[in-house]
Amino acid sequence: MDVLKELKPAANSTHDMWRLLTERFVVDLDAVAKVLPAEEPETVWLSARA
Image (cartoon, rainbow, N blue to C red; front, side):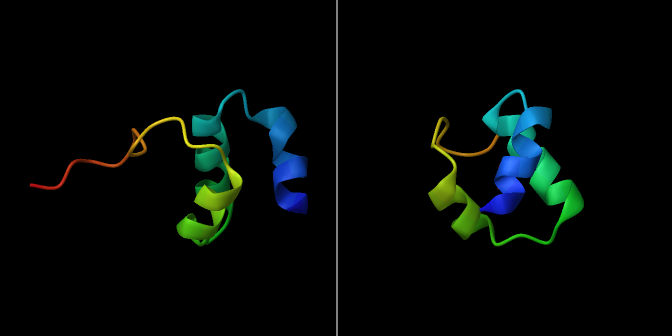
């Protein structure tokens, strides 16, 4: 993905990459999840569902 190559210098972590992508674009999170390495079972910034 060209977008990932462009954003990578600004992202210090996978968390930063997720944030940059979701702030700038409407993204298919499942597609992005396939490209980015899984480091956590669920992204930190999502609130837990009750």
